[in-house]
Length: 493
Image (cartoon, rainbow, N blue to C red; front, side, top):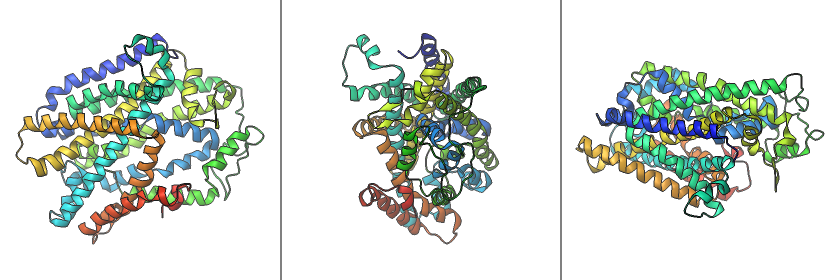
């Protein structure tokens, strides 16, 4: 067991608080459909912003950022441009206002404002609902398996197995842990709706904030009067056409990692990252939890404030943890046991550093915070999936005159079915990375072009949007077949 009893107590206390929040918010969520799915559009912008930031602080992304910082140093700050990191800027400036003014409940419903309700408009609505549900299912499956693999590192199965009345094959242990924690997410999300999601995220952000500060202080204490064993240029965020980092003398395996990543020539890679990052940000929010928080705000002005607030509260806390663990990993690489059959497993840096350098209580806060981050992302995504199915399928096509009781019961049923189906996807998927690559390279890649035109070209019509989305997704799905060994970024244009 790599967790102290105090650490387990902290994790159990967090889980208990989420259950309590779900019970307390149950009455408020049952007041109306809007109260359930959107908090009645009464939640203040700063709470929604903290919730949104918390949902973006996930375990897998943090592990990836620590690995990048270890290898590339301060130059790693540019690599995150592979994702739409400028999204919140464009949202703050104008996109959030446009979205909130429609008073819509989902991104699919918002399309009525843009394209009307004719045949082409309905086609646009339908393809957006399909895209949203596919994305939500993929992210839920990704979160479910990833959470289980993270917990397995701290609570080995051989410690828990003697106390259980059943046995499990080793390959299904992460799924068991994922199922265990998912039960808590499903409970408070389905019971309390958006209010539960936001208040649970607030608790999660508090835990993550304290944990990040503790990690940064521990790293600073260890770094005192020591130099990091890094090559020349590691501290410099700027670069030329080439990367200009040479790890061969210090650690040849790190240099091999740089070669395997395929980010060369670095200058061309940077230009492609900037192009993709800005273009993806111009496409606006995907139909997921970020968009639902915008629609749940009290006014267009507060929607813009919420979007601008996200980066301010997310990046300092996240990078305090990322840089802290990177420093510890660089100082004590030999103690972290990162070796695998394929060489150094850089994605193990974060969990190995947590085990090696965080004392009891702090370790509990870090693990509880990262578990909470996964649960928050899972809860926000589940809430979005419920919104799209109930609002855009059940109420639009199946039962437009449904009573409040029927709507709430449908929400409960849909929530359970969506989670169950995503678990099945997670169990039968080859790996977490396989799901993530499909989401980032295929599904999201097919979304971008049509949505940039939707926002920024007034003559772009419903048929163009619907067929653009359809063909974009289908074409992107062919990338793994046409170029199975290539870096998807080079195929982005």
